[in-house]
Length: 370
Image (tube, rainbow, N blue to C red; front, side, top):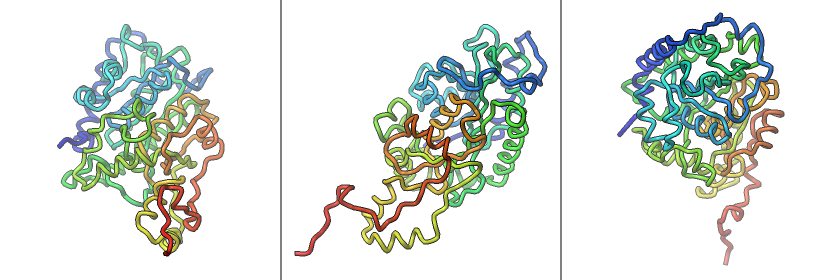
């Protein structure tokens, strides 16, 4: 059984990736001052079809964002240590994405040099040092970016106040170091928020995500082009984890957008109302897996990927500077109009009234007395 090496070898991967960035760009001769990003904002602060975007990982979320970006017409460049790129072949099922993957910043003459308009930090575990923010965004060779410079910069960071404490896919008790991970995320968040793209420029967005599940293809037809190989469902020691992962792709690919670092806690009386209104277990299960039933603090990887791509291709002032994206129970991904509505009027999804639940709408036959 395989596991995400990003959990077990987080320190090693962070060091390896940082060193790769430093080494990979040494051939570049054209240099610039590191403060160019704060000097002026790009004339256009949204990406368009054909723009290249660096996706800095590693992790499954990185692959999901890459596939979503490609589907939207962008040119995603997966950035990860070579050992991770090699392993991604079995998960991505996309030769083009793997062929374009790189261990650092492109050098002159390499693909997409001079065409990079966006940067997304999208490691789903605490494996990136905060120094990598400046390493990339303040890269000395200005010509590696498109003529407008970095038009959009996004950091994907976990919600800090999770309620249910869901274990990550690769979590292993013997290697548990939750306190250190919290400290790393806190430092990374502070550094990104303090960078000119966030506090001076008009390029930065912080996208928060809940406990991540799903991201493969066992759901709506639209996931076939966006999902990873089904082997990702079986990456944990946890009993029935594969069923939980699959259920997120089948039933939980709707979205909630909340301002800032936020969750959607259940109302205090929600559980008691549900038990009072719905006595049969199968009815209750159906109620909690349909009709927009919201997640408290969990997010489908597909939803994070869609949110990131939507943010990249919109003006930064058309959406919250920092927002959290959570799942809700829908069987299709949000449309562009849905995202318009969520970004314009962000807020938690409402909790449904169990007394209004109609089992017949979900294929249950209502028993009648003889």
